[in-house]
Length: 150
Image (cartoon, rainbow, N blue to C red; front, side):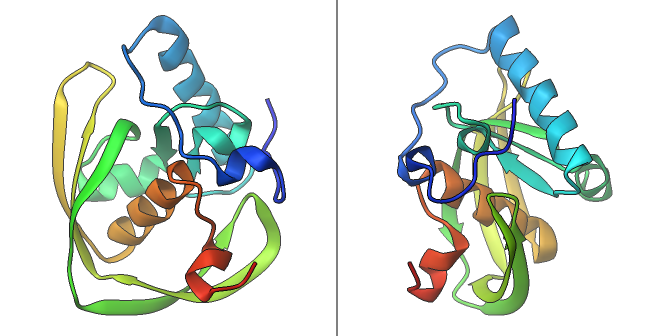
């Protein structure tokens, strides 16, 4: 399993929902966490490893600091604050590409956890930014799209 780089077409697709959390999807999440860590990422979406599923993982330390899970199935942002913050972002699928990106400072977010239970999070700051970045991936968007760059 390797990180898919732009312009691979899977990065531009809307990922399919995870119908049931199985040993295969849990194994995928574990492999994604390993790849993300070895690549020095803070988040990784399934399409970034060539898999058409709505799942992403976030950094273990970020998850612990915010008391949230590391793995999210079928995530959805339900509310964005109008208050925006700009910060430099990079992406494992766009090596050596760093740009200032405006995102909502706070979001409301829901997903399914590895145990099949619903997760609801009110995220702010860096966590909110990472969740927004990864949901963008699952919807076929890259940080370049936030700049109207192709």
